[in-house]
Length: 382
Image 1 (cartoon, helix red, strand yellow):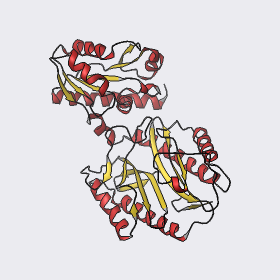
Image 2 (cartoon, helix red, strand yellow):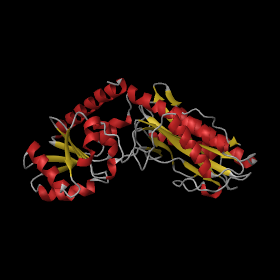
Image 3 (cartoon, one colour):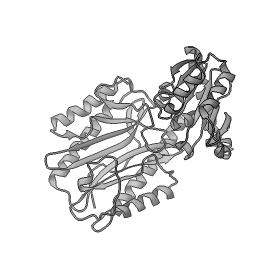
Image 4 (tube, one colour):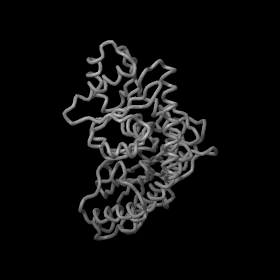
């Protein structure tokens, strides 16, 4: 057996044990998880079939039960070896089948914890309450998300591999950009580099934008040609075994205006202020305060009111980790711990109409934050 797969299996079994212990502590008979990230974390199912309803039932004692479409049986049997699999046809009443399984596990008066922060919860919440009128329904949101915040050494290695691919992708994109080159040509080279380096398809596509489209955060390339004097942005992430390492760099076709270079310097300095504050024991709000203080002193205008968020496992349509995002913002009381991984970012603008977006994947070690993505952070000029 592949050592990576074996280690992942060992960790998943340990995670399930922890969830079951939490269920017993809370008097929960069965916890149900429906977000792709949580199912993958506990059961190991890594594929593109999450557009349909999935539900992982974790009983306080015993083997977890996974509901997914019957057509996915070969994939589930190969990947999710430590669960009981129940496949359903597209015309089946899935909530009724889940209700029947809950009764089989815990009787007609089960205490069930549903993952209410998941979009898929909508499909089963009301039907389960109708099918099980004597059940007590609680919330399982946050149980697995809290566990996922601190990465194991094995997980950190996957993120480091993803970070190396992110750097390769950035180098390919910047190296391709130039006068007369189209945005989609840059995208093609970024994808070529990503796939050649062993990367998986990430949760978000690479965001490749230029000039007046830079301020639109979640759009990507067009067939537009770069021209000398244009600004451009590459925000992207490598992905290995669903672990992500996002980063962003800003550049110019030809020499950058002096005002843009000044903004880049401010962005770099704010980025380092946040990194230096990212120490075990600090609060997320402390990191934000250090970052915000530098921007305020520099008269820079932030596009975002946070300077990053936790990352790790993620599935389309996001690399932010699905529900339960923990951002570095001014009101956050989340404590920074060794083993956390962040997409640390600074996106600022000025009165001259310049934008600078700088971001990196950062690991919190015992001594503080360290960059996992290492591409040059100065404003690119190509």
